[in-house]
Image (cartoon, rainbow over all chains, first blue to last red; front, side, top):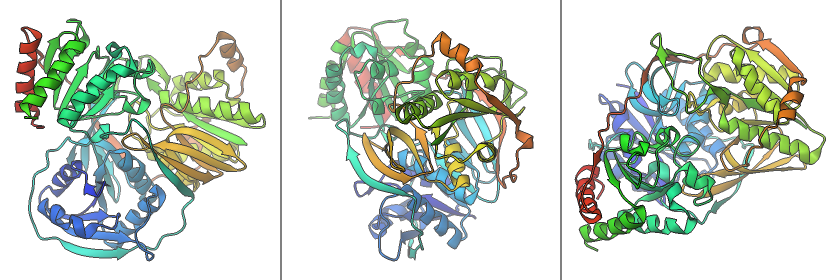
Length: 318
Length: 255
């Protein structure tokens, strides 16, 4: 039995669903799991965390109170907590926040780190991850005195394993950081975060105009999906950069991915090939997307998507 | 200012990767400058074009062919290059230490630009390790950059379309994300000019750094097989959509 730290990510006062998948992997053969909570609401998350097998909830603060968001300070706090509790293994998400924290923690501990793992063997420190735009699956061994793993969101189905968790408040001494977070700005395109979304509906070049994306947004709203775009759509100015799925955009792994008017380049697949069910809607029966999806409809997205939205509404009874 | 920009020589994203000897691949494919590093080069060159007084030095670490990526960076407008030669594909712990040693041997950086990650090994950590080794602050996935009076202000893309505005003093590291700029196209005269620019070559083994206490070992590479069998939903659009709704409810298990 090993002590394993879990970096708990929170949004809008709730633990991100994908975190429970991380806890499920880390639990393995009954490891002792420590949840690291930094937003000051540890007490409130206790019930949910113990339901998934967390034994200790560490409420990490500084003497003056909750540590304000700052990747430098937060990673310093987690590094200190790991040292204090004698924990040499850390699990987190390969989310935007995880991407900015896990490598900082790994650098200061001089730990090996693998991001975007889709499979982990805690006992022999080996992981699997995709490389070369999703064309290669690499098996990698982490060698060192401590181990850090970033897991691709949604690759593991959360499974409860109830236990009784202990609350442990911990105050870290922090030195002043070298970077200052001035402000957080919300963009207009804000919505469900792509990297963690359970359902994504994406549009490609065939969307033809930025305004036409509203059709995808309407459908997305019905099923709580995030809206993505192909590089062709982004480069043509139909969708903002932060919506791009693929090689030079986001890597996503939703349970359901609906590609509308996307031909399906290698670079696009690189960003979504580990999705659960892939659905393609395209007028061209020879589009490469039809070779790599689960279900396809050969048809005009301008006709199919509104129809899909209506039928989903009916099916969901609203 | 002295500006360094780290670039990586990577297989083109469309290249067919053929695996050999269990954990290696056939490297006789088309290579390009890592796309995010290209954005980093563009930003570094723009800083120099604005303030006129800076020098931009491109640094790469790789096998013999990596000189081509260095030449691309020079053709885009960097002033000179440093080529750290190796016959291996070192992990990010070694790479960060080697970059640090080579940069410090050359001069005192004010800003180091890198791409936010590489598209081949997708390790997502070298820039942070380099910053840590140099004791510098680092901001990654940067989509807006400015520097005035020794102060760097960047906007980093964070989740769900939000951005965080970060201030850092010099020296610092900046990891370029998509959207920061549109890299310029290289013209033939730029390529010719780049050939005359100075490139210092050093062997990785000749650099002075302490061996890291950790490492990543590639045990095996396998082709990622496509196991999907596509079912085209036939019939009139309406029927096809009906079938689809039923299927995604049953198999997608999301609602």
